[in-house]
Length: 181
Figure 1 (spheres, rainbow, N blue to C red):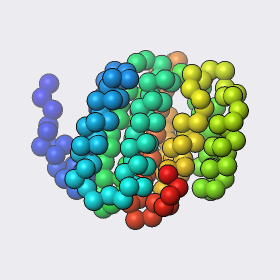
Figure 2: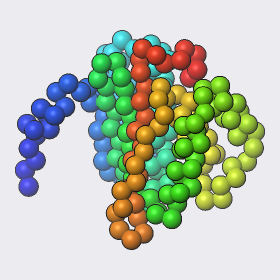
Figure 3: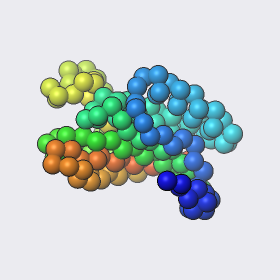
Figure 4: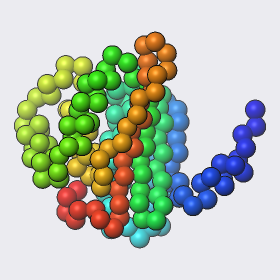
């Protein structure tokens, strides 16, 4: 099957695409894609805070796909348009875990930046209360702290046991909180 690359090119004309990846997510992939993202973004005149926010969110989302995906595959795309950056990831997850994840994201989305910083410090001092988590439990907090807007997300049924989870994080170069990242 031949993809219509002209259609894809036209749809993304006004959109700068820094990274678009779909495949197996391993630590070496994350490192390679991180180098590529750094190289691509070097041409933009970004503040250090914006660069760190985009880069950190990219790494956190890739880590989330690696650690929490029901299969070792996922996708990520980093784009910008008019000084607004988007980092979006997707992966299959077990349907039974949707409500817990929704609850966590909604809780974080309801907090202001200072509350997120305080919550982050509080959680760093404690053990992760989620027995199913393989991480420290602070990745989503880190993402929410660095985002300019609430984290957007969606769950799309895949089969009777799996759901495709998508997260989209926005970073606005003009209004990122200086020093917050």
